[in-house]
Amino acid sequence: MNIKVPNLSSTKDAALLEQEGKLVCILQPAIRRRIQHIMDASKGKGHPLITQSGDQLYLSLTDIGNEAQQAQAYHLIQRFQAGLTADLSALPAPHRQLLAPQQRPLRSLRGVTICIILGVAFGILAMAVSILAIAAAELVLKTTLDEFSGLQITAVSFVIFTALGWASSFLLLARYAKQ
Image (cartoon, rainbow, N blue to C red; front, side, top):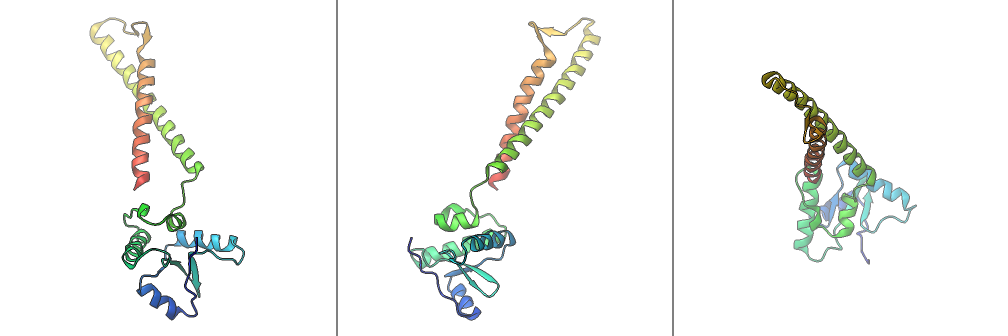
């Protein structure tokens, strides 16, 4: 990857290149920390897409094909930094990786753990409701309804509603994770 990052001699140069849409000032603190960490880890070599002027960090867009694509990338990154909905998949891979790196396995594991806990809680709640329903039915019918086809009704409701609770919490979590 042969990328030519502009050499900034002053903040005036950076402001001019930013107005032209060739640089994007990194304003979001989380992104700044991630990029600063990358800069520190490179031990003075820098990163081919990152340039610095004073205290400001800039992401270079000069490697993107034409000016229309640069402008689109500039506005997309600005929307992302402002916290608005932005589809970063439209950015070139190197830019996308700097702004939103791949999700860590620990974060995924945390989500799965939350879904399992919610599923079990939902199953326990359903089991308690089924116990109440069975007790009410026994009072009305004046008969014992402990088993249905040889299976405990509460155990069946626990298993079914645990699976449903896990699946629904997983779908909701996945939906919110995309946003």
